[in-house]
Length: 203
Image (cartoon, rainbow, N blue to C red; front, side, top):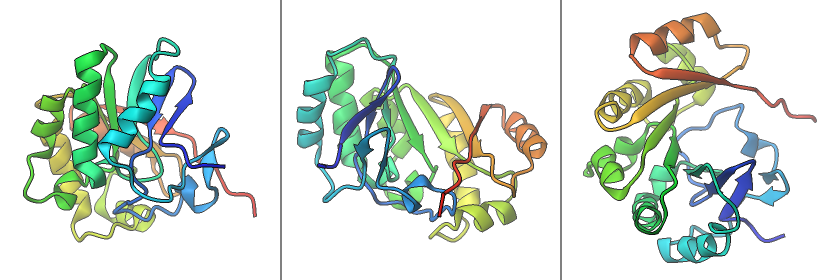
C-alpha cells in the first residue's frame, strides 16, 4: 500500500505532510500502527507543496468537505513552507475552512519565523493545539518533548494564536490526565477545550 498524503475521515479532508515530530508522546497512535481508517500514513519521504497540491486536486472536489485539516503522522509546522504554500492554494481556489492540528512547537521548530502570522496570512482559519496536560510535570511525562521548556513554549504559542484564530486545546484521556484540572486550565487561558479518546494498543 502506498502512503497517503491526502486522506479523509467523515466530512473532513486531511493532509499528512510530514512524519517529523518534536514530541514522543507515549500514547501516539503512530507508535502502534502504520495508519488509520485504511490509509497508510507512514511516509517514505516528506512531500513538497507541489506534490501535496497535485494530490489535493484529485480529491478536493469529490464531495463537500467540512474543512481541510493539516494533521497526519507528524507535526505540520515541521514542514512549514509546505503547509503555507498549500494553505495559500486552498484559500485561493476554495472557500472551505482550513485547520491546523499542532503540538504548539511551531516557534521552537522555526525560531526565526513568525509562524502564527504566516499561517494567518496563508489562509488558515482555525488552530487546534494538542496540549494534553495542565502542568509542565505531566506534559513532560506523557508527551516527552525533544525541546527543553516545551510546555512554556506551547502556552506562548497559544497566546499568540488567540490574536488571530479561533483556538482550542485538546487532551487525550490518558490515566495521567486530571480532566477537571485540564478543563479549568483551558478556561483560564480563555480558549475552547476538547477531550480525545485514548486508543490503547493491543499487544
